[in-house]
Image 1 (tube, rainbow, N blue to C red):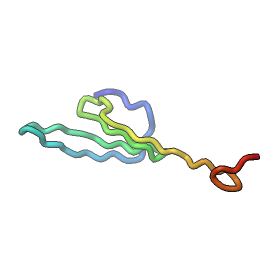
Image 2 (cartoon, rainbow, N blue to C red):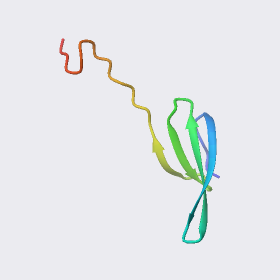
Image 3 (cartoon, rainbow, N blue to C red):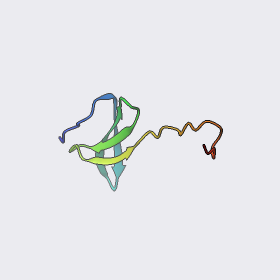
Length: 64
């Protein structure tokens, strides 16, 4: 299995059945709440990131 180089707080295993083949996938939730999905060989299949909001004072289009 490939190497996960980030700490994580949760792992979920699920299986995808397609064309009579079963693929084992793992959803990893990292400490910053971003997620990634890995196949059984440790290859990253998909990922998501958490975008922090832009906290401009005075509204969305405020200029200083």
